[in-house]
Length: 351
Ligand code: GTQ
Image (cartoon, rainbow, N blue to C red; front, side, top):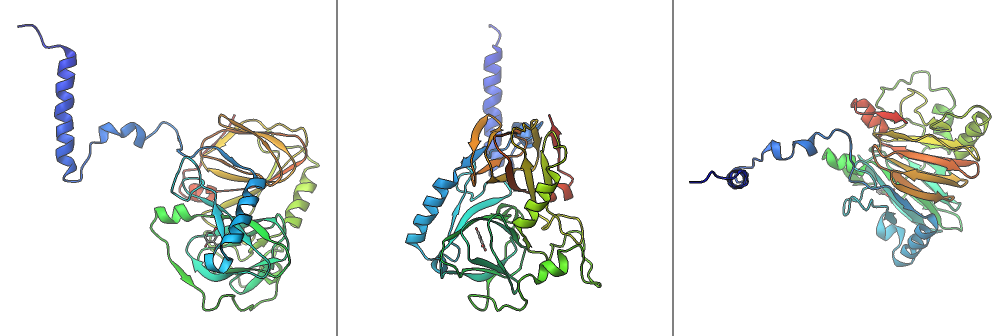
């Protein structure tokens, strides 16, 4: 008899193994050796894709939603920016959510609270407010506003223009941990219990109340970081030497602790001087960017776009990002960096 070929041996072994896998699957077991490489990758390879959303298109589409449903009917009238690599997941990165919210003159988005943390970046229009735990703040373009986990919040538009902002939430993170709770407020709009500006005066001016101490994971009581102040800092530091990878980049902090404003989401503001080209950079925090001012070419992984004012794009974990500013450009960004850092999982590479 001739010897059995290697191919035949392999085929037979393959069949035996598959039959075994099928048998153990009935008992809810599965072999590690078939999936080890994917479970323990050499480096991150996110299913999220580098993606750009043009603001002009976003705005047209959200305005159309404004003709189809009221803010109160919708509870929140938002178009989710869904990463095409994460279909059906309402996620822009594996851990974060993004959406464009519209509130028309006279409308209110009713009070509620949830364990998900949220941030807003005001894009368009004047006259709206967000109320957080009994204090309102007028929303102005570029303002970075937060509603930390379990704080009551509602929105309203007292002006005569549609107001649009970007929502950033840790919805996928909270879903991952199965830690979502939510409830409605007692009334549609919260009673105002403090005058506008109170939190900023108490906690946001390099001072805090004398008997106030916070643990490192507690969110800040400052819930608005006005763009006028952000811009003032960027204008001032832009006179100095830019960092080769970042230009002039600052991170928002809880002024009482120096930690991120909220434990699951970090936020950043960045100025790239006209003509400045950054070196390629990558990090493990998938990041959502908003172009608040200016114009720049941006390369993310194998994608390249000409960024215009208000455009929004996402850089998934470990994809390289590189900018060439055509004009003085200001970027806002947010990511899960503080969560990764507190878990010891944050890495960066300055290329
Ligand atoms: O404003 O409370 O985009 O609860 C998604 C969920 C906004 C909000 C969103 C929310 C909100």
